[in-house]
Amino acid sequence: MTLLIIFLCIVALILLISWGKVNAFLAFLVVSVVTGLLLGIPLNDIPLSVYKGIGDTLGSLVVVIVLGAMLGKLVAESGAAQRIAAVLMKAFGAKYIQWALMLTGFIIGIPLFYNVGFVLIIPLIFSVAYQYKMPAVYIGLPMLASLSVTHGFLPPHPSPAALVGQFHANMGITLIYGIIVAVPAVILAGPVFSKTLKTLEAKPLQTFNVAPLPEELLPGVFNSLLSSLLPVIMLIVTTILLFVLPAGSPLATLLTFLGEPGIVMVITIIVATFSLGICMGRTMHQVMNIYSEAVKDVAMVLLIVGGSGILKQMFVDSGVSMQIAAVLQSWSIPPLVLAWLIAAVIRLALGSATVAGLTTAGILAPMMGQLHVNPSLMVLSIGAGSLFFSHVNDGGFWLFKEYFNLSLKDTFRSWSVMETIVSVTGLVGVLILHLFV
Image 1 (cartoon, rainbow, N blue to C red):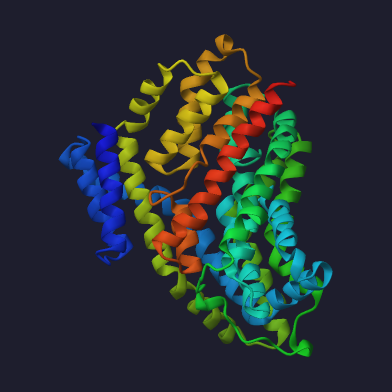
Image 2 (cartoon, rainbow, N blue to C red; image 1 turned 180 degrees about the vertical axis):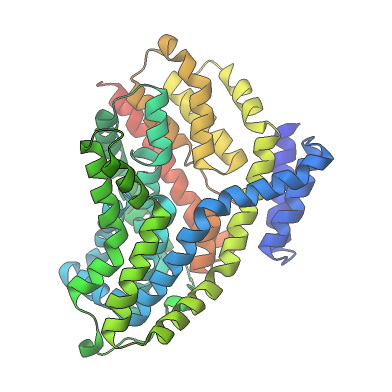
């Protein structure tokens, strides 16, 4: 009965948005409240679930998305994205630009949280699309597939890192195995799959559609790269130094603070304001106007992502994930496949990859002594399952849809299928590795 309620509520949400043309945020609010009632959440607790869902989701995202939009708008307006796109195109050519973006996404994705990476690379994707008249989804999906894979498979991302701890796996070995599994997953979900989407029309956010600037007005290559990728540099440096420094060191405390995504983005905005704004001949007033326009463009994106958090919270508070896991746990399935399946079903129901991964780990970690599988492979199997078929209850789904300005149908056809390919390929890679380790 529980699964039927979840299914009907998700169908109702899709119909309200696509057929009924209801604003997505309002649709989330209505469907989430109804879902909470049907799943048995006490009447007085439903408003608390609404506030917690939107608060927990946006609490960690709002600073990153807003500052990322500001940076992206400035990177586009200043010509830095145009400069970087020109460098990539010159180095790789139009024929291999997908592979160049995919590799860039993989490198950026290793140190960056998914949402930080997303808002940083979007201007680059759209700049290439606008400047060279290439389909945005076709060239952008490989880069986003790279980000998704690093988010689900590779420590130090939150879910894989937490799973490593719960299963007492070796962080370094998990990272090596993760890269081995990630490479074919990214290639299949990125350049290979995106060939089927060449004709998919997308109208990306206009905030990144700026007229090309003359060559003499563009910032230099070093300035463009440093200003755009400063968050990546900061997170790589702080992560490496934290591994080297002893725990409890005052410097380690400072580096932990500086490595927080929100703080990283604040520092980056301050630097970019001068490097791409003031130093390029703009006044402070002009730069602030750019930032104001950027915030207006992502306001509805924030609300929709927050709405997806409300629906997820209703599922969490009703105990749905534990009910699903209990049913699947009774099935006689090989441990690595079972781990993937539990995570995939919870991901389908709740939408959050992190919640799916941690819930599955909480169920299976106490049983590891009886399962006789490599703990690093268990981490990767759960990570792969937690990425399965992202849809309307996942904030990432709505980020992609709203930034690329796609219909629900085309978002399912592109984003959801890409995530599924990543997930299934990841499981196959884990099972092949299991034969040798």
